[in-house]
Image (cartoon, rainbow, N blue to C red):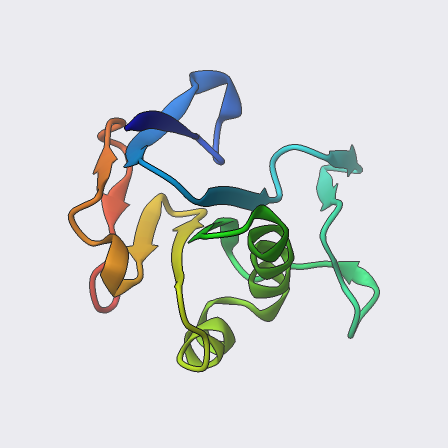
Length: 133
């Protein structure tokens, strides 16, 4: 397998916070930590909510998609980031062959069922999501 290090979306300079072994398929992440600008202590990132015209403010730091095709993964990662966690969970029930990892600003990590036991957290500041976070 390829062993992927999943970048820390809270502090990217720290490297990866988790790892995943993949044999085939695509893994794509959308997050608010790569392209941004700080103005008057407010962070403006590049993922825009088309409903408001402003950067998404949902508490999600990153959405990673695991699927067969990278073009699908890229579109889904951005769309789910914009939708936010709750709306995404409903939407995901209508999709096949896609698994998702949400990383929140509080360093909790939510995995869809097909990823459970396949992601290893390597940075102990992060923890797996449980009811109530």
